[in-house]
Image (tube, helix red, strand yellow):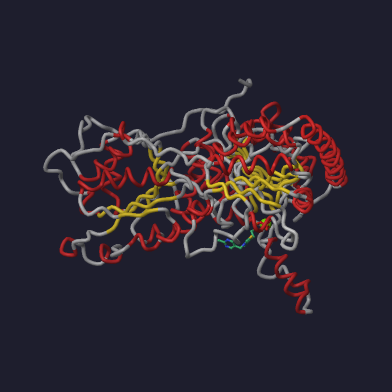
Length: 601
Ligand SMILES: Cc1ncc(C[n+]2csc(CCOP(=O)(O)OP(=O)(O)O)c2C)c(N)n1
Ligand SMILES: [Mg+2]
């Protein structure tokens, strides 16, 4: 364990309780009891009367523990916190959102969790469905006859139990479905009247020891044999990695498989770190400085093994006329809905391995180990040497590019990240990047060398999801000793700054770097493109985009929300001290933010 450890305690507000009921007395106590039995650790929430019964049960029946509340100031943040927690831990926590208006606020981040295939248990309220029991006006506004309809197209399941007796199964089913691959968000809507119903007697709760999780789908052995044959015979094999599981054994299997085959590896910034980016076989990562390396590997490949890559067809664009042979390990066909086109273009695979990625990997690794004869091993070694020298050359080029702009003002993101790593010292390699910037990631300034070194993007490409996801990831990383960092745009942070208050309130240590270019730069680029295409003045691209008058005081905003606020840092010479201060704050269990004035790209 390094000498610094991240404060493991999340602050919880402790209720004053003279005594606590031993068994559920009210409808919502049953919900709370189920959450406890399922070991749901937290409920992120923005309060609302449509779940005041549940709120009371968590505080006065459970004692605000197992699960404990994480108080948020916007439902979008509450769901994003749960999303980030799932990205970090692989497990769902709950988010409670107010009847219809709260759910409306939450829709964007529910969509993000859906696109990112992450489990979140969203709880909501409605009603009373019995109109004769409604308070005038407010209960009518906040009752929807079919509230789940709002999120049906981007949840795996939603349900509104019609009796207290039906609640336990609804919660259990939702929990199970959320965790079965492809994972995703689920929604359970709880009628106010049921929550506030006084129980006449005990409610039967399921025996959870008999509610084991369904096993993961294993690959078809014949398909594995065919895939192994294809991989071993390949001249220029490529591993194309996406949303892999980031478990230690998947990580080890991937490295072993790549080395056995002498395969080029291309990774994706959408998913979590699946492969060490400083490995000599790693040729590039999409949406990073090394993007071209990944694209070149794909261009030259004769056989591609794609693993849980969500947009295989997109990655293979340009190869339509002379497609490589493709083994596609995926469960994506089970995640297809008809509302959003997040299923991406349809890839044409020679072997479609419908399987859990870890099981397929283990089988492929074992198969390749057995099948690889001496001549094939020699070919693989030669390939590996050639790939290593290619990646070395590219690395030297990127490092030189970054070094040449070291003193740039506004500051180069690569320089800022190098300084941040220096401030993290020996913990840099263990640091978790919970969210990255919109612009390309400066590969050589910050390599991802451990599982979950980067957690992948937000799924829905939705401005405002990042801050909550980062706070949720830090909540999930609690006690791991791994520092959590998020690099977010100024536009991104401004859309959901209150995530900082949640982190400050609960003592969740997360270090935000605001990559502040004082504009919605991504969209400036779009306006530039349109103007050029139309022969109009591109110098007007900044209008309706730039945010420099007045300049936002991000450090002041962070301080007002209870976090350590530092900056703006305009001179690269000021970065080291700023990051030391920010790291010291997270070491004390407090969130911090450093506002860095960066050059747009
Ligand atoms: C909810 C939502 N609104 C708008 C957009 C469109 N959009 C994409 S990137 C972007 C700019 C974000 O600005 P910032 O976070 O500062 O990053 P920068 O492009 O400046 O690096 C916008 C507005 C979006 N993706 N999501
Ligand atoms: Mg910006």
